[in-house]
Image (cartoon, rainbow, N blue to C red; front, side, top):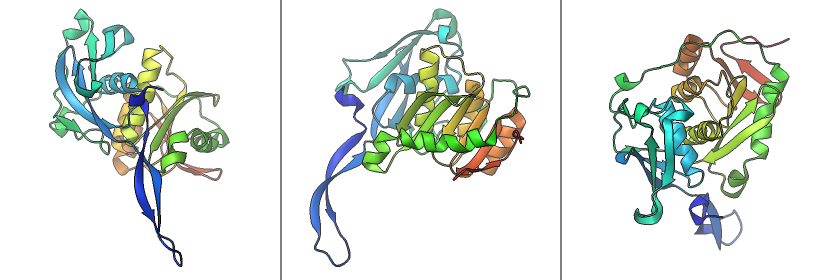
Length: 267
């Protein structure tokens, strides 16, 4: 394995339990490190992320931001080996795509926020028309997807400190699963994987391990993923955006139960 793809880091801890002497031992924590993204050779932003699938992360984020609108816009996606610690990804676009200047980003995007790297909330814009009506999903299928996602969270098993996102086909087949300290990064990695592998995103379901914020719904909408399922709750703005976009939003998918916030399901 590439050492830059290690998602956990060993640290020294002292474990305390009632009635027992403290025990010194090593434990695994989720790795969080910065990576710089360049667009056409120019510095664009720095993302705090869990190392691994960095090329997918770059492509997924640029897709969500409208810097690329089609896989054909990408001329190359390369790790800059001459950069310090090799932690720079450069996405080069085709000449036609370069005619669209990338939107401005501030220097640093944290793992906890999908839009806080933007200079102003007014910079947010949805470039995609609302979804057309879709065939309702069986709620039993949707309610079971988070458990299938959980079964694939190997790094969470090691650290207990990572979010996960997965994209499933409408039939329930898993297409891609990614983990990261940032829930938005995990989604970007999934979308980047689909774009780079030219996988269709129609009739797909995005499943996330935590809550659903506005940014998660926005990323799904721009990616063309019409259904989002979460283990936890959506925010009010996530529900409003899902309804405006025609996206089917589900939350509290636990123990076979599920809440539908924007769409009916099959009986």
